[in-house]
Image 1 (cartoon, rainbow, N blue to C red):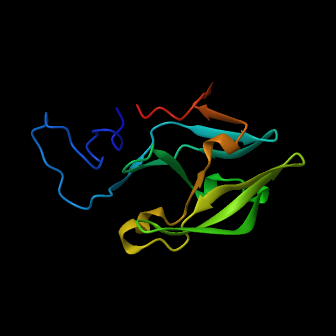
Image 2 (cartoon, rainbow, N blue to C red):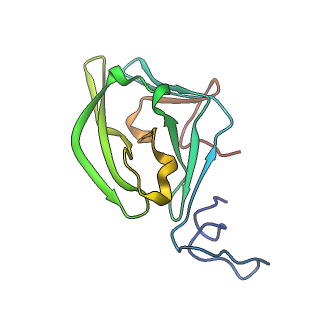
Length: 149
């Protein structure tokens, strides 16, 4: 079970078989530390390498890894004009990853000026998992998303 899907504690609806209630907004965010080293590779280059990643658990979505900007190879990122707006986080800016004559368009995003309720996202970047060639959790290549435990 994930925290944010189906009947997890941060989902939009709880099952009838719990002894608790969740107070707060219908759309919930939880930002917590990820305990392992994570790397992403694109075009033969390691684009991110972190031991300080954090998972964003968000109602209705799979957990998303965010990493400190210092743990990302900024020399491989090219800013784009693409922006999206999330009512729960703010306006996202995007970057493409360019390595080995290949480009992953709008593969990275961040919230440079997040809304007050998500200010802790400032200074972190996230990557579309499928845009990278390979992901590593510690030294093991990951197929699918990172496991949370």
